Image (cartoon, rainbow, N blue to C red; front, side, top):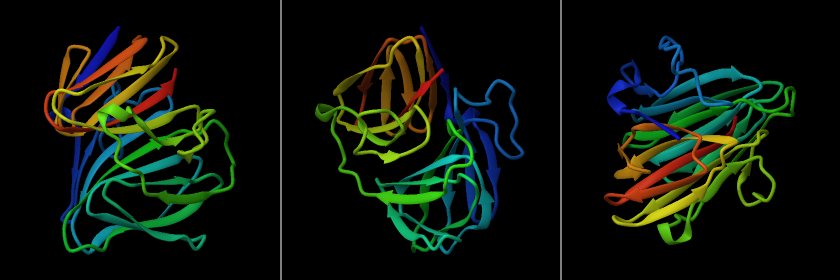
Length: 234
């Protein structure tokens, strides 16, 4: 049983006049050989984007890129003609496949905060696609809500090309939920807000936790919290 807490203060940093980014794993100029990802999960970036700014057009290929909007909204545009605005609490998925050029902007009046989560696909050279979806906020009583998944039986989630699922839940203080992970899988969990106890390990907002050899996971909210959890193959 292994839960490795990664405090927010220990994450990689990158800052521009319009972007304040923290990296849970090695990314860009931040490199830590002990933080190269968890299974196919390769990037979990915590980005704050100032108003009227963002990421200008740039290419990707062969990567499943999930964007979870924590506050504000993000506007997506790509060379395929897709364009859409994803607001706080909702999710977009871009499967880069054979190649896609896209831009992401904060066109709002206030700061936008997002998690950008990159997962390696289980096949290369797929047709690129993009989709955004509004999700109801689940509560502890409703368990985890699957936001993006490539696993069987997850038809309500946005599709990705990998045997993985990104879940979310909102928990009131004192609520707890359980998740059967299984010893053959692993995970990565981040409280977007609040404070949690994960099988005895306390996590503050925006901390990370790499999880291995945990057949049954118990997530307990020590205060009102919002949690994201990636269930991943080994």
